[in-house]
Image 1: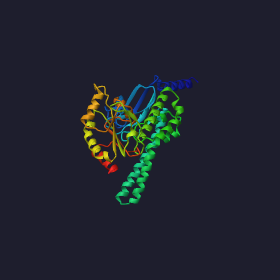
Image 2: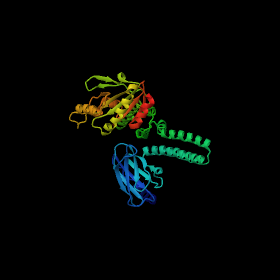
Image 3: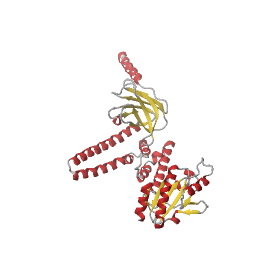
Image 4: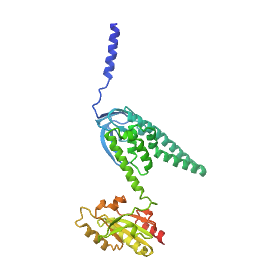
Length: 385
């Protein structure tokens, strides 16, 4: 009996030695095994904000094909791990707890991540995403082969299939959210979809509605929900400025204080021109706009220029505005509240840089944007000649 108790005590002692001490609250410990990665290389955890820029928030050095990150974090967030001299990066959920990563240097995005619930869910998402991406790669290889063999019927079929699969891949995050509406990872995924240029606003609205229980789970999630809701509002506002949409009406004061409204001055073709006296590119473009106006005004061209003067560096914004109008011989309609980029009309038209133009047809429909130089004259000629 004593021998049995002794054996049991040894076993219990062994297990107790292997048991890890719990981490302190709001801390993470990430252990990475990276076979084949050279000692001394640096690895980083990064925040990627727009697909190009990245901020490093933690760094570790590879030793004996392993490295470890430790630090503090309160709320889960999608981040990426990169290793110097290793192509690509590994997205994962950085959150409190112990995370283990088996890193594959030849395909870092396929690396294995375990240890936390959100990363388990992210593994599900990435596995399905990578499978779909592989399918698209195979379709493209077949399309290239079909084109080389002059089988254009097959080539065209494959191009259509490629387009359909690519569209489905771009929207897969929303499909995942619909399948996992109670997952914290789903909310993080939706936030990550803000980066990019091809977002479907209706899908964002649908996904956010599905995640309301997750959003209401805690204060941090509510902030994420507000961020996504604000993004939706901005995207809807931007969509009102798409080609084919009716340009939003506005009114603003002319230099003499008289209010001028877009709808009151529209011609057969109207150019809405955002500029400023301090803007070098705007002033260099003005002679071209003058030439176009003089050539096509009698045929129905109208221009209304909105000045973004009012910079804190200008001693007298109105005087600078009026002088630039006179110096550049700008003989059309001019308005401004002299509030710089806080100009209400500029905000209505989502103007972040100047010069910027919108070209409207006789019905006030936007038919072109951001045209300058010869491209501007060609478009006006197409509409009025």
